[in-house]
Image (cartoon, rainbow, N blue to C red; front, top):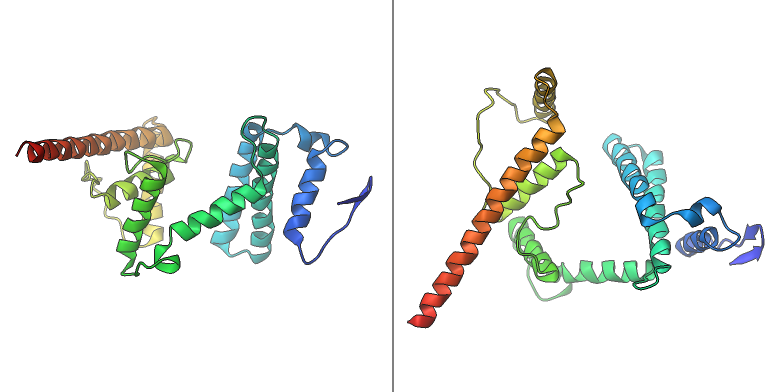
Length: 240
């Protein structure tokens, strides 16, 4: 807590509490005007930038950078939680965020915290998806895939979700390019596609987003067909 207008005590044994206290001081009257003026909307791009910066340190195994960027990303969590605490109708704080996260981790690991038994990774993933669908009352395996996600990573997520649900579409065409199994081979093939898109005047990100939308439409149509068939079967069973 504040000692004087310009100093704060630091408890080395409770650094997270100190971070929360500093954030509170920055947002409070007499704190930092810039921090006090921020909103969830204005902080969104900073959260994205910090996530990208952290990913770079993870991929390059930059230990010092990783430590710093993990802190910068944690700041975005604490900052947004502090902003959320000030909401007039639906306030919540960092303690609520941590409690919800802890409960979710316990709930989604019944093979650790309940009486279910681990079988293999495939069954574990299927159980995880089922729990998420129950929690969020989702009607599609694609619900929750962010529209703002980058086109390539979003396409991967769409295909992964559809594949786990047994609804992955077959390849629409053959590129006529032999791609090896290594990351460098795949990267080179992707780069060549980007070059080709540029050469023919096509926005690669936009084209991939459109292709992903077509896959999503196919998957949702298949899901609707499954629900209709299930409802029809249930109706026939009642008639019998």
